[in-house]
Image (tube, rainbow, N blue to C red):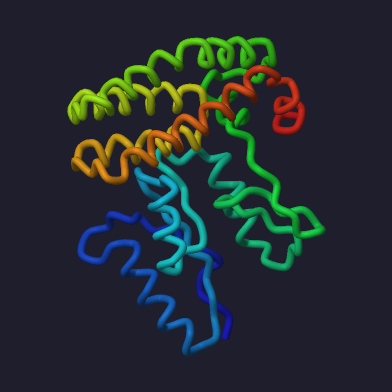
Length: 222
């Protein structure tokens, strides 16, 4: 029996039955029939921890709101062609034909071009340089708030950093800062230290990339 849908998009925060519960019920039904329909989460929070939770719950992939058409197209193309032996995993980077994982670029240049409304390399380069120059003071503010355990100020600083990272299409950095913002709001100090380290490490990757953006531009936009 053929599956009735090629793929399913679910909102994690659907009323009555949320996306995770829906997927669990679907998987139980499909197990009996030997089927597997790709299920893609649509959520306002697609940080690393949340993504891992979604995948462990039976979902196949995750898109963060607002969903851009190009992103939706890429994800659907991936999951609608299960015969491709060199699939792309949006959760952990690309897989080459030899099975080696490639680390994704810290800046999504296609998204940045869409945000700016241009793919002119000099303009993208200029934005990246400005971001690399102006983000470090935000990191200093985050560290100061963390050291004084100023929960509200840490939350505000994380929110500002998240917005800045989103504007530069630093997707992983944005997700880490979103998690930091939420944990600060909840007062989860026991996990904040590791989150602070993760943010700092990811920004180092972003800064290294911004120092030589033409390498990434050629691979993502050509």
